[in-house]
Image (cartoon, rainbow over all chains, first blue to last red; front, side, top):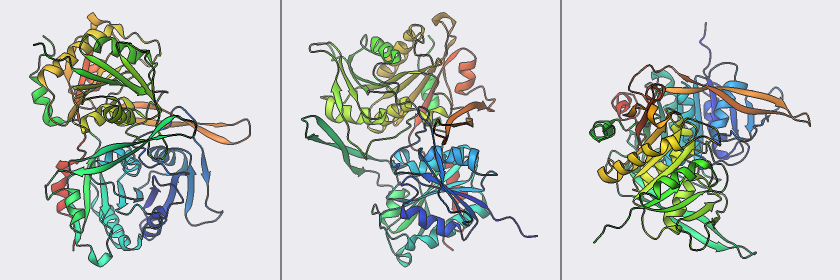
Length: 259
Length: 259
């Protein structure tokens, strides 16, 4: 008797109509049974936001009899995972993949990223999960070159099983398949955004701001995701959701908390 | 010559009118020069969301000549920190405090919490930061009992200096001052929300959902924040924003990534 095909939940943060999620659906439908539950509008930079002060809607958008079930959801990427697991899927998925994000989620971007927060949410719920991002912000980015690597990484995860409470943050450089040098397991580079607020005046005389900024990486380590990507590699950072800074516990215990 | 009083930035996620932030302003104005930049509406469960697809407004809400400068901001808690640092404050603050949150941010709640994401954002920007939460969701929660401990913790942080790239997640039990047994440095309990979607039908016949759920903690460790809070202690979890699961690197490096 043949094994059941793996059940794969797909979501993203650019919205269900984004070319990036279409590319991910293409790859995953070669691997398993696919169900899509993704935001009905762009939800970039939503981090781990969830919707608790308003209601949520889901709409089936795939046609009757379609091979792949697709739903749009009015909520955030994390809402999508929660509602998919609880209201859409008939069993716990074998894998959750998020993306392909249009743009980088390397380094500190992991914290702001809706793509990665969806993967982290799946991880919290005990579902193996991977977030994929391509270093190209364009809506018409070319996802074809990334597909062979995304397939390989996914198959590896399904075969080998991820370490407990770890999800993968995969970033792919904007290169042709044969220009990509390989895959590297990395640590998150210690980098940040140097904000600049673009201050403007509305037609009605009110001042407002656009949040802009420049990504600053002063981490020179060659074991970081930034280094890998700058040098033609795909970066994989294992990501955890225990945020405890265990290394700081000892020092903090020497303070006078209870004198 | 006397030292300059520390400059303290205060924000939260319940909004600038919440009683919790008023209590925090009371305590902090005994310690330093206070500037408030907080959301103009509730922003609970916004995680590390930032506003990049729309504009941001800030409004000075303190009266001319008031001792404490207060601003409301149309964005998320993380936006508040970014705009405070870049557009409101004349120098980098010596401390950022967020809260007092109406309700717990212990355990996995740290990931969904706007209160803690504001503190984490300050940490990313190199500002010592603490998030405070009281285990009482009521709008008219009694914050008086917590005040002596919040003052003590803040003074300790200002004196001893936090470890690099670490912010504090402080949760206070809903107890009287003299019932609180003390302060414990803890790790984040491995717990999660067991969701339940409350499905309803609108007056117009459309189905919608409310996200509800039950907090499930199967972590029996006595070194967790959940244990401390359940046993009458204030919990302090040191929180980091390097999400790399360093312990998983070795195992992942044995996989066949580049064969």
